[in-house]
Image 1 (cartoon, rainbow, N blue to C red):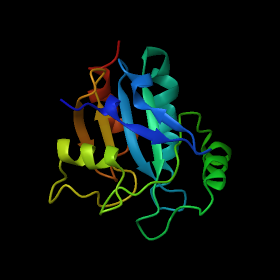
Image 2: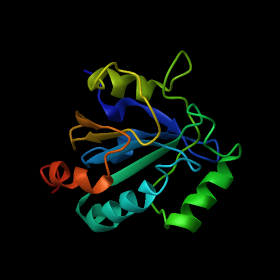
Image 3: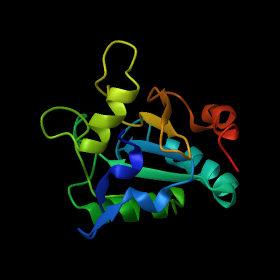
Length: 159
């Protein structure tokens, strides 16, 4: 049976990274954008990461430009923006698509595991998926769900 850890993703520098490295840790996987009304959620995500990284939490950010072109063209601008404006220290990966024929296989899998309210497609930036230490997709959160609202569900997965 497929798990989140079976996927490989691309780092901003173009290198491939296996998600197996995160096996045994709870994950929050989120599609992000730097020029979106929801961009301030980076602050809340970083606060969760700071609070729980010592208990295993890893947040994986995937910049996406599919919603009104709200991401920088150059990935180095994206990573710099996240660090400078929101103090982001959790991993940010290469820009991806989350919907359609060009959707990254990881997001195709996530959407199949937890569908949205009306469809499996991701509706907007900052859709968040909570993944158990076993690699199971536990919950999907709407873009407008503030990161702090995930904390209660996250607590059940922490070491």
